[in-house]
Image 1: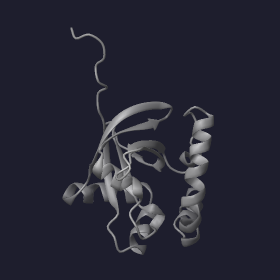
Image 2: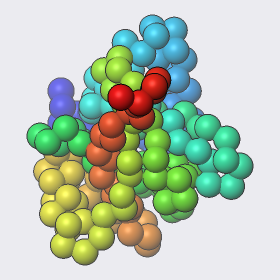
Image 3: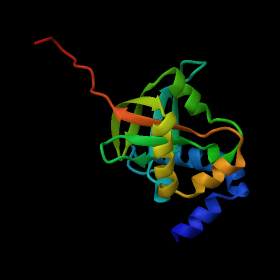
Image 4: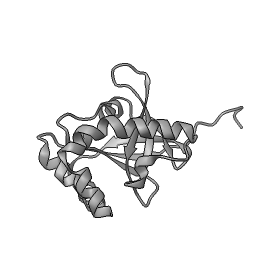
Length: 162
């Protein structure tokens, strides 16, 4: 079943339709289930990224596939389903790296960092091994797909100082 899903998700038809259908469905179901269900996570682990818009400064909620890391972080892949332009959420993180994610029903403050150089190459190898269609997405576009590492940041201390 996984191979079939990978084959379908790496096709051009999926790339045309999915950006309009998958995020809308994810947002609606995630909201209705109070963060407990994310339909696209049946294919890949997923989270909801809440980040400030690069131009507007408004909070933007974006359902995204992710690759969880053993140390408690996450890798986000700006594949845009193999379409030409970088997805908007990547510009948001470049401008405003402090964000929040909803992960498995929990809200977690994170800081994003664009991966470059050897660190990016290691991460790219890992994400392609994790989900092979990413290699097909990269082959279809002239741009270099952006990879971000999200790491949890401690919540600010509230109340009187000790």
